[in-house]
View 1: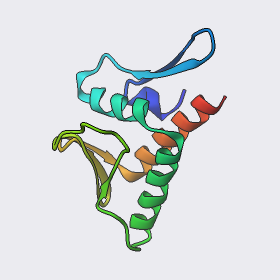
View 2: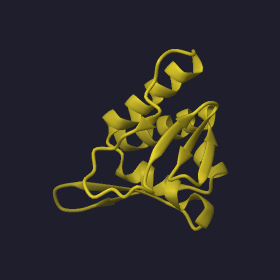
View 3: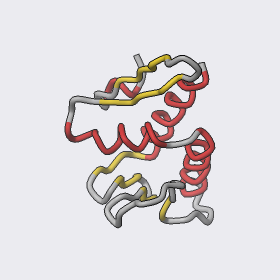
Length: 112
């Protein structure tokens, strides 16, 4: 049981004919934005956010807003690095360490 369980997140995969769909979901409305962000993030984006968090932790230069490569994002859809937390969509605050662990668990899951 990992940290994703503490945030009421469940990881799952659906096998289609030629590809696999990875899902992150929750029944807890407070964490739906987090589940959605994890689900749409490419592994390179997950690694990049971990790196940016580590830069912020070590008081080095980091970009305040982490951008996902998605078109059609609204102004309310954002990941903000606001030490010592990550702020998702201006409403959900997650401590740096928790976010790094969540990202790593997601990466481990989708790379199995």
